[in-house]
Length: 372
Ligand code: PLP
Image 1 (cartoon, rainbow, N blue to C red):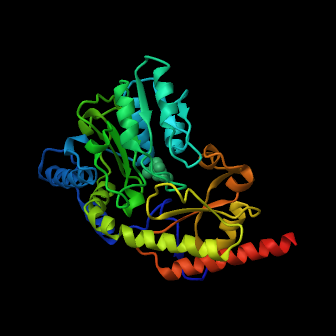
Image 2: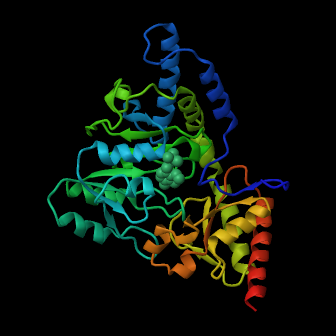
Image 3: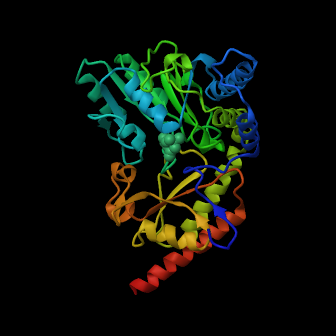
């Protein structure tokens, strides 16, 4: 961090810990009991665990028995893909690496240029084989915010006998989630994307699905995930889960902030591109490209101004690798390698947006001067 006051516009990477989560976390950390112990200390810890379970289940309008607590979204995604026993897995090309790399041989379903999964391609791919399949399609993309037609995916997949998993890590508090209405069998959540602590997440598993644990031992979480539960993390998760309704109420205001950012960028910065602007999106995310200025240069220049955003590309051994998400949308490397993600949150303000736009305008102007 620089001496300048912080301007945190990277909520899709992680959201600042909310007060209610910090309070619940520290109260749980002071508890002595193991939730599996039968004595009073254990029962107190168990009550705290089950209260959090109820709050997390309510995020997706589902039953408490569906909730399997994990160490986060990554583990939940791995459990979904590897625990159900189906070896044939089809996942959209824009999934998070915790899906795409969860097992070998995953078949990627293309997305259209607008970032939305190609349903015809999915149907064709499913029809190619009778082997029981699992289809995994995310609720909203972490880089672009683009929302997938999960209910349509689920209908189409279920008609063909497939199970359906949805990585909904970026959705809570931004879009309502109803697991039954979506028609999915499994759904992933992560606490730290919604203002809870890092290292806590959940896989929600419909009663009809048999899941083999990938972490085995003590048989916790109804045998679906062994290991003493991370009670402080889970209690913090439960505390923010209980406030998802409040966040949904604030979503229109967040969308207005994001829209004002995009309007200013379009008006003031020649050549800037808004990626996915015409697609359905969660309200807080904007993927912006400044062709000619690499994403990592932008991120570093903004960081010097105290502004935190992410690159829409990953750096490996000093080389910028354009994101698989933007490539899958058919964007050329000159655009994909110059894309950043701005993701706002409940504490973001108009002043933050203005500060970002001014700094980005300067970066664009400097690049123009350099090129001249
Ligand atoms: N899925 C998506 C869409 C994400 O954005 C992330 C985190 O960036 C994950 C999964 C992984 O979650 P966690 O950080 O809790 O492991």
